[in-house]
Image (cartoon, rainbow, N blue to C red; front, side, top):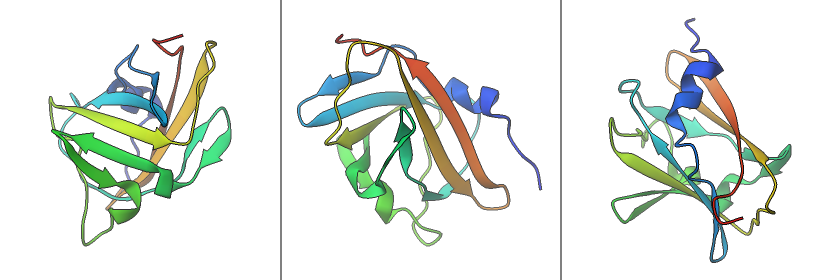
Length: 123
């Protein structure tokens, strides 16, 4: 099975996009790596604390896609060269740097993950 190193996947994250919003936090992804479809998302971690997937959604062109709705029958792709926002409800970021780990399953590759550390841009 082929694996994609996390340092390559980390390029999906748009540095400086991490911020507090009303009711939660958000950050943005931009896929410059190539096409691929996730068939499942696992809980994010924020500073090593797991965030349930029912509190995480993608926001693309005004359309909301909850993490929990992604499945082999309903895969999700982070479109090439198009910003995708990730919104996490019920979370709050203090002004110091935070570490977020993002995990997802891709058919034929298994579970892929990457993490990033950033300081909220509103802090």
